[in-house]
Length: 120
Length: 113
Image (cartoon, rainbow over all chains, first blue to last red):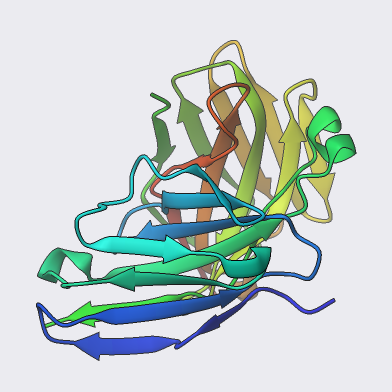
């Protein structure tokens, strides 16, 4: 089974520039998550999709961040314009969110390798 | 809001030693708790998942325990090896309010050969 794919792996940009990240979840996984992990901290959820609908984007800075998941498969996360404090690793994860797994409490998320963003 | 704390932030042990990593959380109404491993430049790898009704899970040299009433979990690593060097993250998911993970800040483990 192929894992969660992300690209690019690394990106360096100057502040006020735009950047986009791409994620391809595990085939058949209905739920997709984007996390931001700042150095020395645990990942923080930015947005959660169920198929192509948004479930939770309460922690997404909507003035500069946007995300979409067309056709309920791949997803892109965009930052425009970038700030210095956006330097972080952006992690994508997916899960099946099957009814049985939820009932059993065994639903888990599978993470991609992440994209390391440096804003200069 | 769920707060997750991990102690210690960093740990260095000689090879072969047994060790314990600690995780505490503020809201005991959890759905499950999961321990992850993160290697530099890589994503998170799930190690153990404990359902809210369980008290512990074991996988090889790893054993994770859960005490919901006290808001604590421990990850026990037996006979540590240099390959165990990584950052270990604890994450909890609540019964309500969506199924996002609340992560701790992690424990950076170094096993010295």
